[in-house]
Length: 249
Image 1 (cartoon, rainbow, N blue to C red):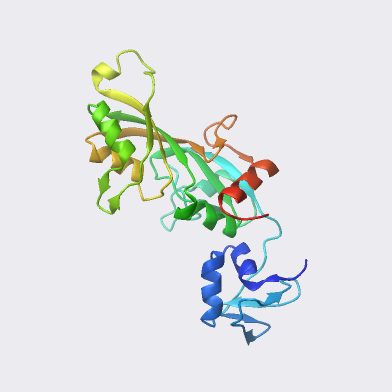
Image 2 (image 1 turned 180 degrees about the vertical axis):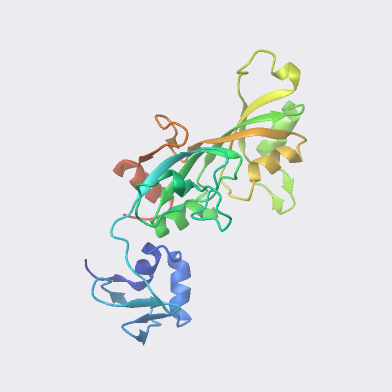
């Protein structure tokens, strides 16, 4: 392993984004072989030098892991839970690396969730300026009119501000007579990542989400991945995600 910029090493170790790592260096929170480093251009070989951030030695991941998981309901999108509840990592018992979900799906939401130990890619995919699209299928109740769909497309006001415009279309009925019972199926695509955003957007137009599933993240889909199972991303898919996150691999 050759020399790399210090901020890149910190980011790849999953500690912080590259920009946040630069701030850590400038603040004097990083040391190499016992010496505080404040120069952003500093290059080191992590295999040959001890790198310490906030008093803790960091280690490089042996290799990066990139997984696509079809998360079931009732499973937390977190690495661990202090209350002992089931998390997405419980679905990956064979994965020995320390991995994390890219963003979150709430407990009652199922579908596509990326899992990785590549901190730099994770931070890039979640950064608002790259506007990475996520598509959901929602089963909602309440009269879903064309005017309400138009509001969702334009953006709706939530307690934490106006949402960006969304792509929205009504899906065909799965069961005959659903619409007459006030049940509608909708596909919605957003690029923001606010907490419970899709559910809150529908609530803002007077609809209640009864079931929610993420079916697409960027160009990735759940095709071939049953609920509760996962697959490894291909090199082509990983490179695509890197491009979307403004990174080079």
